[in-house]
Amino acid sequence: MTVHPRSISTPIDPVKLDRLAEVAVKVGLQLAEGQDLLITAPSVALPLVRRIAEHAYKAGAGLVTPFLSDEDITLSRYRYGADASFDRAAGWLYEGMAKALGTNTARLAIVGDNPMLLSGEDPAKVSRASKANSIAYQPALQKIVGFDINWNILAYPSPSWAKQVFPGDDEDVAVEKLANAIFAASRVDNDQSIAAWKKHNAVLRERTQWLNGQRFHALHFVGPGTDLTVGLADGHEWQGGASTAKNGIECNANIPTEEVFTTPHAMRVDGHVRSTKPLSYQGTLIEDIAVRFEGGRIVEAKASRGDEVLNKVLDTDEGSRRLGEVALVPHSSPISKSGLLFYNTLFDENAACHIALGQCYSKCFVDGGNLTPEQIAAQGGNKSFIHIDWMIGSGETDIDGIHADGRRVPVFRKGEWA
Image (tube, rainbow, N blue to C red; front, side, top):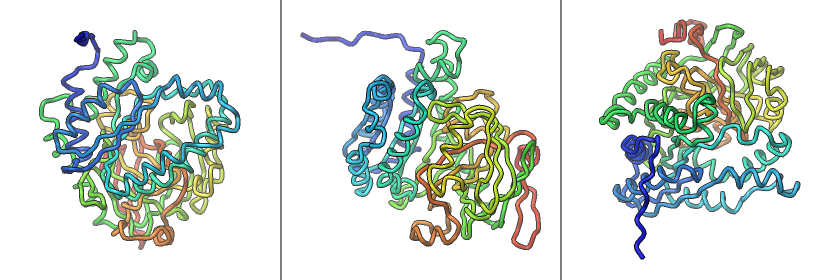
């Protein structure tokens, strides 16, 4: 018997969804002919996974292998799983992923789970499971933070996520609004999306070239509740937009992206800083983060909401109280102008200048691909199981670049490039 698929009405524009899939393959990954592709995604994002697989095979992909997660299965673990299981993770899976990445498999991650999924679960279990997962993921993560291969992250508008962003709307309306916000931020809301990305990458490249030409010793951030000096790692290099991985393929790791970023010196961050947007982390909304750094390390930390979770994160390991990234984003970025809180770092970090606790990126060093972990550490790069971005920029933020001889150069004034 032949079964014909039902025509199901969806609030997600299929044309723009297909463009997003095409951009993922041709801009995000620039997938090479014959290259395998590993995809992770929430099960609800299967429509996007299918379209990406189609575009990947049309581009000459070898094998496309998807791994799907499910919110209900995740919740079942927290509600019925044995207590001891929260100190374990599927290491065999991540070892397999590391092996695949080691043989030049491209990596694509689709995000879209409910950002508050675990908000009602035991925070101790959430913390334990996260730490176990972070440790198990290290073999694969090192291939990504080391930029060994071309990789990309993008988003799918799941109903549970949409209802968090637009709680007052019916589900279909919320999904449509979130989908349109994702499409606009990802530059696929027009029929020249690939050309739009080419133009955007050129703008980001101009910014990184100027910053790399300056060779600043530090950045000084001043704003409401903020007076922070971020020393920059020795031999740091600014990145933004498209970058070339060690396998020679130029890719856009994040879609969307509005940032230019580099590596701070883990031992040379001093002063105090306050967050300008909430941080959604593992089901907890952490608001009004305020921390003080001495000698690169957070010595005081508090938040008006989510304080307990914040301090658990800071105690993850030795590197979790130090910075692994500093990023510059103008207040006029499209995501900032949307006025939305996405509850997802992929988007929210592109609304404001931000810093990241934890692991640094080796690609943010001159000749970083050839540096050993020991050399990266000696130049000021941080090492940690975590990498968590939180926003510190606003329309009131001023930033100066400081040269080694003390000379200052305006970089941002009132949240915009100076």
